[in-house]
Length: 470
Image (cartoon, rainbow, N blue to C red; front, side, top):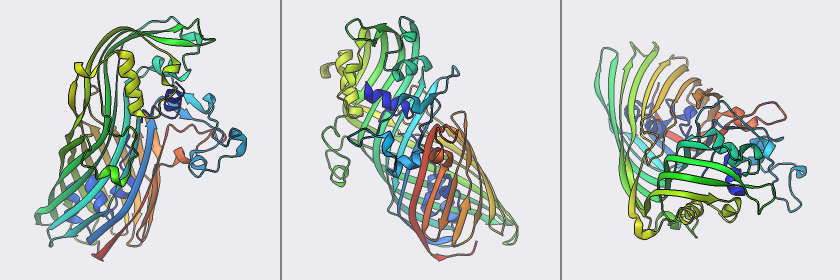
Protein backbone atom coordinates (compact mmCIF):
# COMPACT_ATOMS: atom_id res chain seq x y z
CA UNK A 1 0.00 0.00 0.00
CA UNK A 2 2.94 2.35 0.48
CA UNK A 3 3.46 2.33 -3.30
CA UNK A 4 -0.19 3.20 -3.94
CA UNK A 5 0.07 5.98 -1.36
CA UNK A 6 3.06 7.49 -3.12
CA UNK A 7 1.30 7.21 -6.47
CA UNK A 8 -1.75 9.11 -5.25
CA UNK A 9 0.29 11.69 -3.36
CA UNK A 10 2.38 12.84 -6.30
CA UNK A 11 -0.46 13.01 -8.78
CA UNK A 12 -2.47 9.85 -9.48
CA UNK A 13 0.41 8.08 -11.20
CA UNK A 14 -0.19 4.39 -11.85
CA UNK A 15 3.07 3.81 -13.64
CA UNK A 16 1.36 7.98 -19.28
CA UNK A 17 0.26 11.77 -19.26
CA UNK A 18 0.66 14.08 -21.47
CA UNK A 19 0.53 18.24 -21.42
CA UNK A 20 2.94 16.39 -23.61
CA UNK A 21 2.41 19.16 -26.15
CA UNK A 22 5.72 21.07 -25.79
CA UNK A 23 3.86 24.31 -26.52
CA UNK A 24 7.02 26.39 -26.54
CA UNK A 25 8.45 24.34 -29.41
CA UNK A 26 5.48 23.19 -31.48
CA UNK A 27 4.15 26.73 -31.93
CA UNK A 28 7.47 28.05 -33.26
CA UNK A 29 8.08 28.53 -37.01
CA UNK A 30 11.51 27.05 -36.29
CA UNK A 31 9.98 24.05 -34.53
CA UNK A 32 10.84 21.82 -37.49
CA UNK A 33 9.74 18.24 -37.00
CA UNK A 34 8.08 19.17 -33.69
CA UNK A 35 5.43 21.17 -35.55
CA UNK A 36 4.22 18.00 -37.26
CA UNK A 37 3.18 16.68 -33.82
CA UNK A 38 0.71 19.56 -33.77
CA UNK A 39 -0.32 19.35 -37.44
CA UNK A 40 1.51 17.50 -40.26
CA UNK A 41 0.47 20.15 -42.82
CA UNK A 42 2.76 22.72 -41.16
CA UNK A 43 5.83 21.00 -42.63
CA UNK A 44 4.96 22.45 -46.06
CA UNK A 45 5.38 26.01 -44.77
CA UNK A 46 8.57 25.57 -42.75
CA UNK A 47 11.18 28.34 -43.14
CA UNK A 48 13.82 25.58 -42.91
CA UNK A 49 14.93 23.76 -46.04
CA UNK A 50 16.31 21.03 -43.79
CA UNK A 51 15.60 20.34 -40.13
CA UNK A 52 17.33 17.77 -37.93
CA UNK A 53 16.11 16.91 -34.45
CA UNK A 54 18.88 15.03 -32.69
CA UNK A 55 17.17 14.53 -29.35
CA UNK A 56 14.27 16.02 -27.40
CA UNK A 57 12.83 14.78 -24.10
CA UNK A 58 9.72 15.74 -22.16
CA UNK A 59 8.27 14.77 -18.78
CA UNK A 60 4.78 15.90 -17.82
CA UNK A 61 2.66 15.33 -14.70
CA UNK A 62 -0.74 16.85 -14.05
CA UNK A 63 -3.75 16.07 -11.85
CA UNK A 64 -6.72 17.74 -10.19
CA UNK A 65 -6.63 15.83 -6.89
CA UNK A 66 -3.53 16.92 -4.97
CA UNK A 67 -1.24 19.93 -4.93
CA UNK A 68 2.46 19.65 -4.14
CA UNK A 69 3.36 21.50 -0.91
CA UNK A 70 6.63 19.94 0.26
CA UNK A 71 9.19 22.28 1.89
CA UNK A 72 11.38 21.97 -1.21
CA UNK A 73 10.54 22.47 -4.88
CA UNK A 74 10.36 19.78 -7.54
CA UNK A 75 13.28 21.51 -9.24
CA UNK A 76 15.33 20.89 -6.09
CA UNK A 77 14.12 17.30 -6.08
CA UNK A 78 15.02 16.72 -9.73
CA UNK A 79 18.44 18.30 -9.19
CA UNK A 80 18.98 15.96 -6.20
CA UNK A 81 19.69 18.89 -3.90
CA UNK A 82 17.13 18.08 -1.20
CA UNK A 83 18.64 19.05 2.20
CA UNK A 84 19.68 16.21 4.50
CA UNK A 85 17.09 17.16 7.12
CA UNK A 86 14.42 15.80 4.77
CA UNK A 87 16.16 12.47 4.33
CA UNK A 88 16.31 9.27 6.34
CA UNK A 89 19.58 8.11 7.97
CA UNK A 90 20.28 5.90 4.94
CA UNK A 91 20.05 8.94 2.63
CA UNK A 92 16.70 8.05 1.06
CA UNK A 93 14.03 10.73 0.66
CA UNK A 94 11.43 10.98 3.42
CA UNK A 95 8.16 12.00 1.78
CA UNK A 96 5.51 12.99 4.32
CA UNK A 97 1.75 12.86 3.84
CA UNK A 98 1.41 16.61 4.45
CA UNK A 99 3.74 17.28 1.49
CA UNK A 100 0.59 17.10 -0.64
CA UNK A 101 -2.67 19.01 -0.28
CA UNK A 102 -5.99 17.52 -1.33
CA UNK A 103 -8.29 19.44 -3.70
CA UNK A 104 -11.76 18.51 -2.42
CA UNK A 105 -14.52 19.95 -4.57
CA UNK A 106 -16.72 16.94 -5.28
CA UNK A 107 -15.50 16.66 -8.88
CA UNK A 108 -14.18 13.45 -10.51
CA UNK A 109 -10.40 13.25 -10.39
CA UNK A 110 -8.03 12.83 -13.33
CA UNK A 111 -4.28 12.45 -13.51
CA UNK A 112 -1.63 11.99 -16.18
CA UNK A 113 2.02 10.99 -16.16
CA UNK A 114 3.65 11.28 -19.57
CA UNK A 115 7.23 10.80 -20.69
CA UNK A 116 8.43 11.20 -24.24
CA UNK A 117 11.67 11.05 -26.23
CA UNK A 118 11.67 12.42 -29.78
CA UNK A 119 14.39 11.77 -32.31
CA UNK A 120 16.34 11.28 -34.29
CA UNK A 121 14.23 12.96 -36.97
CA UNK A 122 14.79 14.62 -40.33
CA UNK A 123 12.55 16.91 -42.35
CA UNK A 124 13.34 18.53 -45.70
CA UNK A 125 11.67 20.50 -48.46
CA UNK A 126 11.12 18.66 -51.74
CA UNK A 127 10.53 21.94 -53.60
CA UNK A 128 8.70 25.23 -53.12
CA UNK A 129 5.45 23.42 -52.29
CA UNK A 130 6.24 20.11 -50.58
CA UNK A 131 8.07 18.59 -47.61
CA UNK A 132 8.88 15.10 -46.35
CA UNK A 133 9.78 14.07 -42.81
CA UNK A 134 11.12 10.97 -41.09
CA UNK A 135 10.76 10.78 -37.32
CA UNK A 136 10.99 8.44 -34.35
CA UNK A 137 9.52 8.71 -30.89
CA UNK A 138 9.26 6.75 -27.62
CA UNK A 139 6.22 7.43 -25.43
CA UNK A 140 5.31 6.16 -21.97
CA UNK A 141 2.13 7.18 -20.19
CA UNK A 142 -0.19 6.39 -17.30
CA UNK A 143 -3.57 7.97 -16.70
CA UNK A 144 -6.45 7.86 -14.23
CA UNK A 145 -9.79 9.27 -15.40
CA UNK A 146 -13.02 9.90 -13.48
CA UNK A 147 -11.84 8.59 -10.10
CA UNK A 148 -13.93 9.06 -6.96
CA UNK A 149 -12.68 11.75 -4.59
CA UNK A 150 -13.72 9.71 -1.55
CA UNK A 151 -11.97 6.55 -2.75
CA UNK A 152 -8.73 8.40 -3.45
CA UNK A 153 -8.85 10.09 -0.06
CA UNK A 154 -9.23 6.73 1.65
CA UNK A 155 -6.30 5.25 -0.28
CA UNK A 156 -4.20 8.34 0.37
CA UNK A 157 -4.79 7.83 4.10
CA UNK A 158 -3.57 4.21 3.72
CA UNK A 159 -7.01 3.05 4.89
CA UNK A 160 -6.10 4.20 8.41
CA UNK A 161 -8.44 7.17 8.82
CA UNK A 162 -11.45 6.09 10.85
CA UNK A 163 -13.50 8.89 9.27
CA UNK A 164 -13.84 6.67 6.20
CA UNK A 165 -14.85 3.49 8.07
CA UNK A 166 -18.23 1.84 7.40
CA UNK A 167 -19.45 4.47 4.92
CA UNK A 168 -20.81 2.67 1.84
CA UNK A 169 -20.05 4.06 -1.62
CA UNK A 170 -21.84 2.77 -4.69
CA UNK A 171 -21.64 2.88 -8.49
CA UNK A 172 -18.14 4.33 -8.69
CA UNK A 173 -16.79 4.42 -12.24
CA UNK A 174 -13.26 5.23 -13.36
CA UNK A 175 -10.60 4.08 -15.80
CA UNK A 176 -6.86 3.47 -15.56
CA UNK A 177 -4.73 3.11 -18.69
CA UNK A 178 -1.00 2.64 -19.17
CA UNK A 179 1.00 2.30 -22.37
CA UNK A 180 4.66 2.33 -23.40
CA UNK A 181 5.43 2.21 -27.10
CA UNK A 182 7.62 3.58 -29.87
CA UNK A 183 6.85 4.79 -33.35
CA UNK A 184 8.62 5.45 -36.62
CA UNK A 185 6.76 7.83 -38.90
CA UNK A 186 6.74 9.24 -42.40
CA UNK A 187 5.20 12.67 -43.06
CA UNK A 188 4.10 14.17 -46.39
CA UNK A 189 2.99 17.79 -46.63
CA UNK A 190 2.08 19.85 -49.68
CA UNK A 191 0.84 23.33 -50.59
CA UNK A 192 -2.48 22.58 -52.27
CA UNK A 193 -3.32 26.19 -53.24
CA UNK A 194 -1.11 29.26 -53.48
CA UNK A 195 -2.20 32.64 -54.86
CA UNK A 196 -3.47 36.12 -54.04
CA UNK A 197 -1.70 36.12 -50.69
CA UNK A 198 -3.38 32.89 -49.57
CA UNK A 199 -2.21 29.32 -49.12
CA UNK A 200 -3.89 26.04 -48.29
CA UNK A 201 -1.64 23.28 -46.93
CA UNK A 202 -2.38 19.61 -46.39
CA UNK A 203 -0.40 16.91 -44.63
CA UNK A 204 -0.47 13.31 -43.45
CA UNK A 205 1.73 11.26 -41.16
CA UNK A 206 1.74 7.46 -41.20
CA UNK A 207 3.12 5.68 -38.12
CA UNK A 208 4.35 2.18 -37.47
CA UNK A 209 3.90 1.36 -33.77
CA UNK A 210 5.77 -1.06 -31.50
CA UNK A 211 4.26 -1.73 -28.06
CA UNK A 212 6.25 -2.85 -25.01
CA UNK A 213 3.83 -2.77 -22.11
CA UNK A 214 0.21 -1.83 -21.56
CA UNK A 215 -2.45 -2.25 -18.93
CA UNK A 216 -5.96 -1.09 -18.19
CA UNK A 217 -8.72 -1.28 -15.61
CA UNK A 218 -12.05 0.00 -16.93
CA UNK A 219 -14.33 0.06 -13.92
CA UNK A 220 -18.01 0.10 -14.90
CA UNK A 221 -19.30 -0.16 -11.34
CA UNK A 222 -17.75 -0.48 -7.89
CA UNK A 223 -19.54 -0.75 -4.53
CA UNK A 224 -17.22 -0.62 -1.55
CA UNK A 225 -16.66 0.48 2.01
CA UNK A 226 -13.64 0.85 4.29
CA UNK A 227 -13.85 -1.57 7.20
CA UNK A 228 -11.82 -1.71 10.42
CA UNK A 229 -9.29 -4.54 10.55
CA UNK A 230 -9.39 -5.93 14.10
CA UNK A 231 -6.17 -7.88 13.52
CA UNK A 232 -4.14 -4.74 12.68
CA UNK A 233 -3.86 -1.72 14.93
CA UNK A 234 -5.38 1.52 13.57
CA UNK A 235 -5.74 0.06 10.11
CA UNK A 236 -8.58 -0.72 7.77
CA UNK A 237 -9.14 -2.69 4.60
CA UNK A 238 -11.06 -2.07 1.40
CA UNK A 239 -14.17 -4.22 1.30
CA UNK A 240 -15.31 -4.49 -2.32
CA UNK A 241 -18.92 -5.62 -2.24
CA UNK A 242 -19.28 -5.63 -6.03
CA UNK A 243 -17.03 -4.92 -8.97
CA UNK A 244 -17.88 -4.91 -12.67
CA UNK A 245 -14.79 -4.16 -14.74
CA UNK A 246 -12.50 -4.99 -17.64
CA UNK A 247 -8.89 -5.79 -16.75
CA UNK A 248 -5.98 -6.35 -19.12
CA UNK A 249 -2.20 -6.19 -19.06
CA UNK A 250 1.06 -7.45 -20.54
CA UNK A 251 3.99 -9.09 -18.75
CA UNK A 252 6.81 -8.34 -21.22
CA UNK A 253 8.65 -5.92 -18.91
CA UNK A 254 8.52 -8.11 -15.83
CA UNK A 255 12.17 -8.70 -14.96
CA UNK A 256 13.30 -6.39 -17.79
CA UNK A 257 14.30 -2.75 -18.02
CA UNK A 258 13.40 -0.48 -20.91
CA UNK A 259 16.76 -0.56 -22.69
CA UNK A 260 17.87 -0.43 -26.35
CA UNK A 261 17.93 -4.24 -26.35
CA UNK A 262 14.34 -4.28 -25.09
CA UNK A 263 13.23 -1.81 -27.73
CA UNK A 264 14.52 -3.85 -30.66
CA UNK A 265 13.48 -7.24 -29.29
CA UNK A 266 11.26 -9.08 -31.76
CA UNK A 267 9.37 -10.60 -28.81
CA UNK A 268 7.81 -7.25 -27.91
CA UNK A 269 4.10 -7.95 -27.38
CA UNK A 270 2.50 -5.11 -29.35
CA UNK A 271 2.33 -3.70 -32.86
CA UNK A 272 0.00 -1.48 -34.84
CA UNK A 273 -0.50 1.48 -37.14
CA UNK A 274 -1.54 5.08 -36.69
CA UNK A 275 -1.87 8.28 -38.67
CA UNK A 276 -2.34 12.07 -38.42
CA UNK A 277 -4.22 14.32 -40.84
CA UNK A 278 -4.04 18.09 -41.02
CA UNK A 279 -4.85 21.21 -43.05
CA UNK A 280 -3.70 24.80 -42.63
CA UNK A 281 -4.87 28.06 -44.21
CA UNK A 282 -2.48 31.03 -44.42
CA UNK A 283 -3.32 34.63 -45.35
CA UNK A 284 -0.51 37.16 -45.88
CA UNK A 285 -0.71 40.04 -48.35
CA UNK A 286 3.10 40.33 -48.67
CA UNK A 287 6.26 39.62 -46.68
CA UNK A 288 5.99 42.94 -44.85
CA UNK A 289 2.43 42.26 -43.66
CA UNK A 290 1.31 40.19 -40.65
CA UNK A 291 0.56 36.52 -41.24
CA UNK A 292 -2.68 34.84 -40.17
CA UNK A 293 -2.82 31.05 -39.93
CA UNK A 294 -5.84 28.83 -39.21
CA UNK A 295 -5.17 25.11 -38.75
CA UNK A 296 -7.01 21.93 -37.93
CA UNK A 297 -5.80 18.37 -37.47
CA UNK A 298 -6.89 14.95 -36.29
CA UNK A 299 -3.97 13.39 -34.46
CA UNK A 300 -3.04 9.92 -33.21
CA UNK A 301 -5.72 7.87 -34.92
CA UNK A 302 -4.95 4.17 -34.50
CA UNK A 303 -4.21 1.47 -31.94
CA UNK A 304 -1.73 -1.20 -30.85
CA UNK A 305 -2.66 -4.87 -30.66
CA UNK A 306 -1.03 -6.49 -27.62
CA UNK A 307 -0.45 -10.12 -26.79
CA UNK A 308 -1.36 -10.26 -23.11
CA UNK A 309 -4.14 -11.14 -20.73
CA UNK A 310 -7.63 -9.60 -20.76
CA UNK A 311 -10.54 -10.38 -18.45
CA UNK A 312 -14.16 -9.47 -17.84
CA UNK A 313 -14.27 -9.15 -14.04
CA UNK A 314 -17.53 -9.77 -12.17
CA UNK A 315 -16.84 -10.34 -8.47
CA UNK A 316 -18.36 -9.80 -5.05
CA UNK A 317 -16.98 -9.64 -1.51
CA UNK A 318 -13.27 -9.07 -2.16
CA UNK A 319 -10.95 -7.60 0.47
CA UNK A 320 -7.85 -5.50 -0.21
CA UNK A 321 -5.39 -5.00 2.65
CA UNK A 322 -2.54 -2.47 2.71
CA UNK A 323 -0.06 -5.32 2.96
CA UNK A 324 -1.23 -6.72 -0.39
CA UNK A 325 0.80 -4.05 -2.18
CA UNK A 326 3.93 -3.98 0.00
CA UNK A 327 6.09 -5.82 -2.54
CA UNK A 328 4.91 -4.21 -5.78
CA UNK A 329 7.46 -2.31 -7.85
CA UNK A 330 5.57 -1.34 -11.00
CA UNK A 331 2.32 -1.43 -12.95
CA UNK A 332 2.70 -5.06 -13.97
CA UNK A 333 3.16 -6.10 -10.32
CA UNK A 334 0.02 -4.16 -9.41
CA UNK A 335 -1.84 -5.96 -12.21
CA UNK A 336 -0.65 -9.28 -10.80
CA UNK A 337 -2.03 -8.42 -7.35
CA UNK A 338 -5.36 -7.41 -8.87
CA UNK A 339 -5.55 -10.67 -10.83
CA UNK A 340 -4.84 -12.71 -7.72
CA UNK A 341 -7.30 -10.84 -5.48
CA UNK A 342 -10.06 -10.81 -8.09
CA UNK A 343 -9.62 -14.51 -8.75
CA UNK A 344 -9.18 -14.33 -12.51
CA UNK A 345 -7.30 -17.14 -14.24
CA UNK A 346 -5.56 -17.19 -17.65
CA UNK A 347 -7.92 -19.91 -18.85
CA UNK A 348 -10.91 -17.56 -18.39
CA UNK A 349 -9.52 -14.62 -20.31
CA UNK A 350 -8.52 -13.53 -23.79
CA UNK A 351 -4.93 -13.62 -25.02
CA UNK A 352 -4.88 -10.23 -26.70
CA UNK A 353 -6.38 -6.74 -26.53
CA UNK A 354 -6.09 -3.39 -28.30
CA UNK A 355 -4.93 -0.14 -26.72
CA UNK A 356 -5.85 3.03 -28.58
CA UNK A 357 -3.68 6.04 -29.27
CA UNK A 358 -4.60 9.37 -27.64
CA UNK A 359 -6.77 10.56 -30.54
CA UNK A 360 -7.38 14.31 -30.44
CA UNK A 361 -8.82 17.12 -32.51
CA UNK A 362 -6.42 20.09 -32.63
CA UNK A 363 -7.60 23.55 -33.72
CA UNK A 364 -5.25 26.54 -33.85
CA UNK A 365 -5.16 30.19 -34.86
CA UNK A 366 -1.96 32.20 -35.13
CA UNK A 367 -1.06 35.83 -35.76
CA UNK A 368 2.57 36.58 -36.65
CA UNK A 369 4.15 40.00 -37.26
CA UNK A 370 7.23 40.55 -39.45
CA UNK A 371 9.06 41.83 -36.35
CA UNK A 372 9.01 38.33 -34.84
CA UNK A 373 6.19 38.97 -32.36
CA UNK A 374 3.42 36.38 -32.54
CA UNK A 375 0.61 34.77 -30.59
CA UNK A 376 -0.98 31.34 -31.03
CA UNK A 377 -4.33 30.12 -29.67
CA UNK A 378 -4.92 26.36 -29.55
CA UNK A 379 -7.63 23.96 -28.52
CA UNK A 380 -6.85 20.27 -27.97
CA UNK A 381 -9.98 18.11 -27.65
CA UNK A 382 -9.80 14.52 -26.41
CA UNK A 383 -11.69 12.23 -28.80
CA UNK A 384 -11.62 9.07 -26.67
CA UNK A 385 -14.47 8.09 -24.33
CA UNK A 386 -14.03 7.64 -20.57
CA UNK A 387 -14.42 3.86 -20.84
CA UNK A 388 -12.08 3.45 -23.81
CA UNK A 389 -9.04 1.19 -23.55
CA UNK A 390 -6.81 4.01 -24.67
CA UNK A 391 -4.53 6.83 -23.66
CA UNK A 392 -6.10 10.29 -23.68
CA UNK A 393 -4.88 13.68 -24.85
CA UNK A 394 -6.12 15.87 -21.99
CA UNK A 395 -8.48 18.53 -23.30
CA UNK A 396 -6.92 21.98 -22.97
CA UNK A 397 -6.95 25.53 -24.28
CA UNK A 398 -3.63 27.34 -24.67
CA UNK A 399 -2.46 30.84 -25.60
CA UNK A 400 1.23 31.22 -26.45
CA UNK A 401 2.77 34.64 -27.09
CA UNK A 402 6.34 34.54 -28.40
CA UNK A 403 9.21 36.50 -29.90
CA UNK A 404 11.24 34.75 -32.61
CA UNK A 405 14.42 35.40 -34.56
CA UNK A 406 16.70 33.01 -36.39
CA UNK A 407 19.03 32.63 -33.41
CA UNK A 408 16.89 33.18 -30.33
CA UNK A 409 13.32 32.67 -29.24
CA UNK A 410 11.24 33.24 -26.11
CA UNK A 411 7.65 32.10 -25.49
CA UNK A 412 5.25 32.11 -22.55
CA UNK A 413 2.64 29.33 -22.95
CA UNK A 414 -0.50 29.83 -20.84
CA UNK A 415 -2.94 26.91 -20.75
CA UNK A 416 -6.13 25.84 -19.00
CA UNK A 417 -5.91 22.14 -18.15
CA UNK A 418 -7.79 19.96 -15.66
CA UNK A 419 -9.63 22.99 -14.23
CA UNK A 420 -6.35 24.76 -13.54
CA UNK A 421 -4.31 27.55 -15.12
CA UNK A 422 -0.71 26.75 -16.07
CA UNK A 423 1.98 29.25 -17.04
CA UNK A 424 5.12 28.15 -18.84
CA UNK A 425 8.36 29.56 -20.17
CA UNK A 426 10.43 28.28 -23.09
CA UNK A 427 13.43 29.50 -25.00
CA UNK A 428 15.82 28.67 -27.81
CA UNK A 429 19.42 29.69 -28.30
CA UNK A 430 20.65 28.48 -31.68
CA UNK A 431 20.01 24.72 -31.78
CA UNK A 432 19.30 24.34 -28.04
CA UNK A 433 15.75 24.23 -26.67
CA UNK A 434 14.72 24.35 -23.01
CA UNK A 435 11.31 24.99 -21.58
CA UNK A 436 8.31 24.13 -19.46
CA UNK A 437 4.56 24.40 -20.01
CA UNK A 438 4.18 24.64 -16.20
CA UNK A 439 7.06 26.61 -14.75
CA UNK A 440 5.25 27.07 -11.41
CA UNK A 441 5.29 23.30 -11.03
CA UNK A 442 9.08 23.39 -10.98
CA UNK A 443 9.54 26.21 -8.46
CA UNK A 444 6.41 25.88 -6.31
CA UNK A 445 6.67 24.49 -2.78
CA UNK A 446 5.17 24.78 0.68
CA UNK A 447 7.68 27.48 1.52
CA UNK A 448 6.61 29.94 -1.17
CA UNK A 449 2.87 29.32 -0.89
CA UNK A 450 2.37 27.66 -4.27
CA UNK A 451 0.85 24.19 -4.44
CA UNK A 452 1.38 23.08 -8.04
CA UNK A 453 -0.68 20.14 -9.31
CA UNK A 454 1.99 18.88 -11.65
CA UNK A 455 5.21 19.59 -13.43
CA UNK A 456 6.37 19.84 -17.03
CA UNK A 457 9.86 20.17 -18.49
CA UNK A 458 11.39 19.62 -21.92
CA UNK A 459 14.61 20.25 -23.76
CA UNK A 460 16.57 19.13 -26.77
CA UNK A 461 18.90 19.84 -29.65
CA UNK A 462 17.67 20.57 -33.19
CA UNK A 463 19.09 22.59 -36.03
CA UNK A 464 18.14 23.73 -39.52
CA UNK A 465 20.20 24.04 -42.68
CA UNK A 466 19.79 26.45 -45.61
CA UNK A 467 17.31 28.56 -43.70
CA UNK A 468 14.89 30.66 -45.66
CA UNK A 469 13.71 34.12 -44.77
CA UNK A 470 10.45 34.22 -42.78
